[in-house]
Image (cartoon, rainbow, N blue to C red; front, side, top):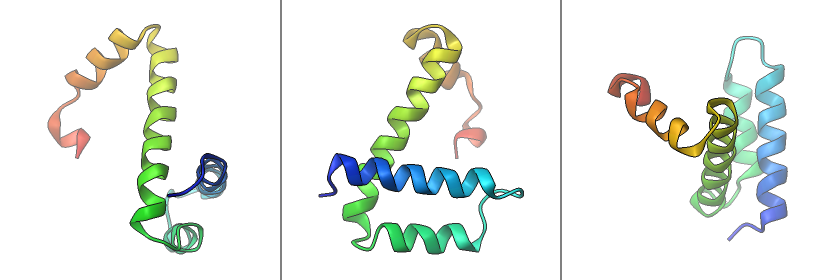
Amino acid sequence: MTKPNDTSRIATELTTHLLQAPDGPDAAAYDLITQLCPRGIYDLLPLTLHLAEAFGALLEERAGSRETAIEALKRQPAEERN
C-alpha cells in the first residue's frame, strides 16, 4: 500500500494541477494520475480515502458540524452524487 506521505504528495500534486486547469480536468490530469499512481488500484485506494477525508473535513468546516455536513450530503439529489 501507499505510505501516508506518498498519498498526501499525490493528492497535493493532483490538486495543484486541477486548480491550475482553467476548464477543469483535462487529458493531462489523467496522465498525471497514471504517473502518480503507477500501481493502479493499490495507489488509488488510499488516495481516494485521503481525498474523501479532506472533502469531509472541508464540508464539516463549512457546515459548522459533522452532523450538518452529513445531512447536507444526504439532501443532494441522487443525480448530483453520481
